[in-house]
Length: 305
Image (spheres, helix red, strand yellow):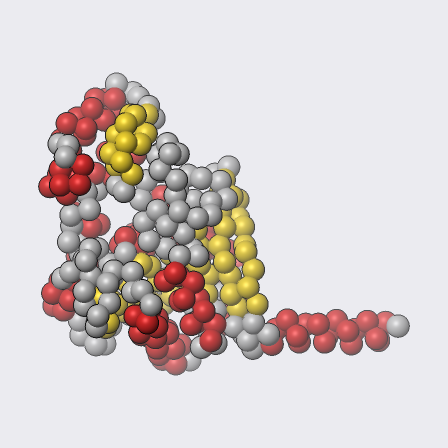
């Protein structure tokens, strides 16, 4: 009986290790539950390396471009982990609900990336590629500039922010018809009065009109350094290979190639332009964007092996 049990266990182990699978992973963090979708390719184990994927601003890990990316990596025998940033919400799924009072900061992503990368390291993963879309590209650049984590072997930036306008007074006035300086002054006065956590109600913030935002969170978003909103300014600080994937008809970031080309050397910094694509690389354009990412990751693995 013991011999039969051992055979069954061995067969089960072979089946699990040789077949692809997906599962949701949850981790505790600051009284919240973080979650992510882990996909292991057929014939691979998690220790073979992972592409850690971050969604765009206020979105989630099942948005079209993230799901398509994981599907493509799986088909090309590459593991991936698509995380949901908590944005201060316990076990968050789906887009962020602007009716929830905003207390989080973009910089919170650093701590959450630490949590996920440390978890992967404990699982024996030594090669991690960070991949982000839109603002999350800037967040992973910010992470690497601060952490220079040796486990990270490369970065993939899909339509990163290079215009520096996301938090500008002009953008705020154009979008909401309100002077950013007036709202910032209110927030700063609250902070000076020791009320940084106090909510300002009926305030326009990011993509959320007439929401509630803590004074601290409002100032943190609209007073970020210029570097954060201009991905190309980070590149001299990054010492791992970087692939930038730009859309030729990006309605949000129309001049990525212009800002990035001075840094492109085709040795450490690479640029791919997907013709006809918009900011979210919809429909067939997703295939072209993800194909470039898959090839980049595959080349990293070949070079390091």
